[in-house]
Image (cartoon, rainbow, N blue to C red; front, side):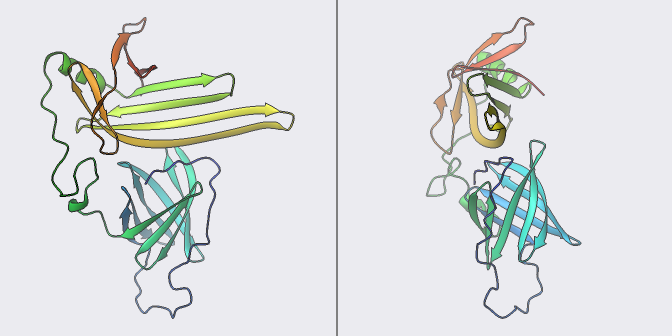
Length: 250
């Protein structure tokens, strides 16, 4: 499940809701409480008084949310990189339909089982396809220490389009690389000024071998990133990857 939230989220509330056209169920259990998962993501919900709270998990990143029931749907907001975004959720039987930013994702009740791990970790026969990388030594160990030393940020501003693109990558010791992205655009014309923004997140696998960074996306084989490490005027390291320069950040 890949979320791409923007400041203006389209809500589609036409999804059939649980119990429409049927007699009321005798069970008193709240259909929204619990965990729904699928497509590499999950939503876990609990009820607190008249409100609902929980987490939306996508690409290994958790986004906390709060919501209230409006009619037979949940309407709420989730937090991503310090900003709040709208969403709607509706339950029909064991399926939860989640809508945010005009995108619809259907999840099923229950947490993902250990036998259905993501493609990046298992093959169709259930056997592990990604083996742990051997412990790095020498130059590779030095590169690993630099990558793990802090988050790494990239920013690019285009005067032509009036847009700013940002990335923030965090290398984790368990072999995951979590990258958050941001986009802002300001456009002025005869009809006034238009502002738009959006955020996203992605997760990769990483390792260091033969003096280079290797990346795997969505379970694909590891590929060389062509990493070069240079220094700025203060002597701080700069990561050069695919024509982009990443500096240390908070």
